[in-house]
Length: 395
Image (tube, rainbow, N blue to C red):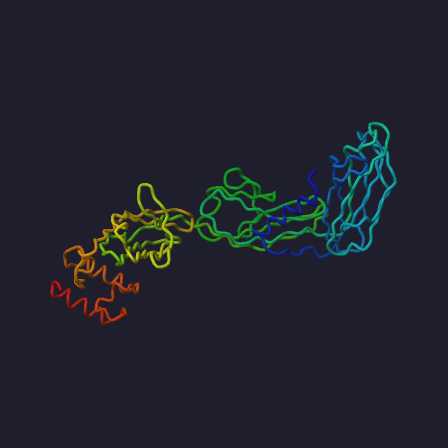
């Protein structure tokens, strides 16, 4: 049997997924008793076992009571050392196989504590000097409500999906899950695990949108603890749609080039270079900016950048992607650029609507390339200069 300490550790691991503790809803506290089977393989090479089961306790009263017994199949006598919060509290007499201790009462147990049990053997029967293991049972009586860790809101992208509830109790509990306030029942088609700590919702269990889940633990004495009503969201995984793919750019050595890619349903954007064997592009101060934005900018271009192809990969919240077309960068060698012509902003050799789009893309981004009047700033005067040249059909 796994010890309550193991279950406690499992609960602690769930703290990344769950929140605080819920209070018991029962009106009156009561002591509940339950028996646990114990089977331990010992770690030591002497009579002290060293391997101990741990039990977490959060008692509302001062005392706990328990009885320990040895399995009839145990082939030698054992006694038990009882540790409370790491300190030795009680040592029992030796009991023979099939025997049990008297009921033991430990005081000062109000609040959170943990109990550990170490077995000690003695020579006799199969024990020739080493206690290799022991089997038995623990009867534990404690005034404690089940502890349930509150659920945290989650966003899920598809069904099936699993939901785990953390529970801590010194005895077995009955579990129930509630969907939108209604108790769930396994049907094997849309719901599995409605009476366990691990709930699985299958396709058809809920529709896209928000829904609430609650978890309830019931002690063997009928005391109930319920979690919060956590809001879960099932989202429809709509793929991103690219509305503005990147366009080819031409620039001069030492100049700049800007690629822009816009999309809907965008949660993350990553730029790559050199398809079909892509390499991710990273920001490099003074050379590359915006590698994870919709606007990628290259500065201080060299002849080695000529022929570079870039494309963008768009991710939505559920990891669904869309991939843009690739756009090529042409870098003109030194001496071949001549005086800049504001009207032919994209430098494709013609003055048309594409130059307006290219200019305003750079102007809205504050790109220094949009400083067409070369006054050191990107402002409204650059728009006037650009359109004066553009309406004239050239420079």
